Amino acid sequence: MGLVGESGSGKSTLGMSVLNLIPNNSGHVFFNGRSVFDLDKKEMKKMRKHFQIIFQNPYASLNPRMKIGEAILEPMQVHRLHHNASSRKEKVHELLNLVGLDSDHYRRYPHEFSGGQRQRISIARTLAVEPQFIVCDECVSALDVSVQAQILNLLKELQQEFNLSYLFISHDLSVVKHVSDHIMVMNRGEIVEFSDAESIYNNPQNEYTQRLIDSIPKII
Ligand SMILES: Nc1ncnc2c1ncn2[C@@H]1O[C@H](COP(=O)(O)OP(=O)(O)O)[C@@H](O)[C@H]1O
Ligand SMILES: [Mg+2]
Image 1: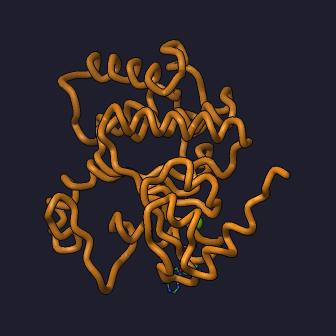
Image 2: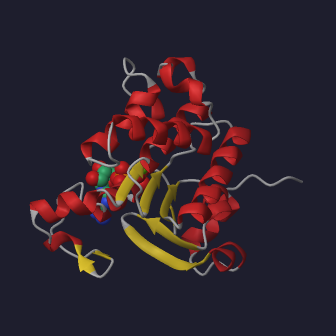
């Protein structure tokens, strides 16, 4: 599911609200048939593992003093996944390979990597807890266009492999269209259009959606 709208329209707020990361005073979110806002603390902690979020700036979300292997391992420890330290470590090596990095990158620090590689590290860290649902909030917006495409393709491959659901947030409709089956268009805190990706793009019903499409640079 793609969520598009200009900066300040309320996309991140909706994403965090769905994950119950900010207080909600109305509405409902259902996950696997359960009402998320009605869960008690203990149940919410268990549920948390299934939801993850990937942000725009991977540098800000990685501890500069922590080796990237340890950064990927940390959430596994928090959620007590796998039997012991060595099986967790093995899992980190697997994850590094899965996102297109080398196993021997384990001992390196975040500053030794490019922006695209850092986003791969955050993706590996996100996958470490084996989530079912991931909010990607402007997760390629800070990257060069060619690197954006590589990360989007990686996200698509991982979706196939692990049967993931994404709420993919971006201000850029061309990016959202590349990964989405369905798209919601947001303007001033409201969803103004919701349809399958092709219809939104080829046959927009809302004037605001039309403006977003018109603002995409075209190759003449
Ligand atoms: N539905 C809403 N109604 C009123 N204000 C909102 C709503 N959603 C978000 N906001 C406020 O609008 C501002 C921008 O929201 P944000 O979610 O960061 O937008 P975006 O991610 O689209 O740039 C924030 O100050 C937020 O608190
Ligand atoms: Mg935002």
